[in-house]
Image (tube, rainbow, N blue to C red; front, top):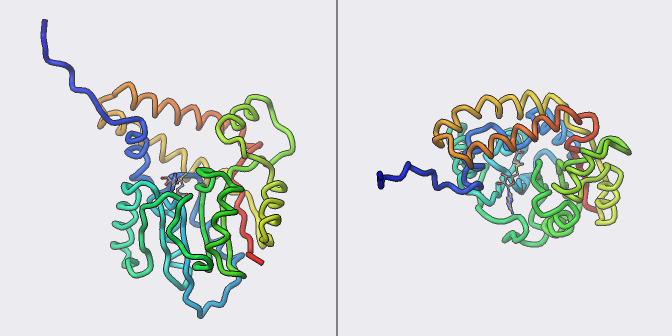
Length: 259
Ligand SMILES: C[S@@+](CC[C@H](N)C(=O)[O-])C[C@H]1O[C@@H](n2cnc3c(N)ncnc32)[C@H](O)[C@@H]1O
């Protein structure tokens, strides 16, 4: 009997998910155009140096756009250093290191002061602590008159098929219509300045197509392990579900001013 064990891949599922996503342009659906569209709802003096937090920044797809289109300094926060390393590399290459500071921290325990920021940005990230909890905690860090810009998974119709309703109720029970999310913002002293749903192109062309192109190489570098295959299968199921039900949900982009 041979005592040599086949080489096993000891990465955990979370490590594999990070490995799968870290080299991608974005870690969630979105686009340069939509980040700019959201920026355009923000009415703050152009000559003032703004303090901006980008929470759950990932590898910084939107952070770079913020740095190139807003006057000020950005603190880009993520829980995983692998994503921040990617952002630091990009920011160095583009000469933006004086505008982007990265911070490894959880979004529910941020080392920020009250009223420190002019803008708090979070694309596809607030769901990690829940929309309402995030709004309540983060509003303290915003100056009065400051802006919160969030993209959040949102029902775009009033009713939908059971399969998708049940899937999302399990994945993220806080999923709801824009009217409910806007009410939460209003109950927390915000006035809505802008809202739009991100386009299907941002899901398919910008996010899922590049993701599909990475499956094979990801499996190869992880020795086709069972866990790597599971990561791929889970992502494929997510893509299939979106393709089937894209008329029922999207990311809503909410831009609100603190009163
Ligand atoms: C869907 S991705 C969005 C990333 C990026 N904003 C984008 O749109 O490409 C969510 C991000 O939240 C980060 N994240 C998850 N839990 C977190 C936490 N507790 N604190 C800070 N970041 C967290 C993830 O590492 C990931 O980068």
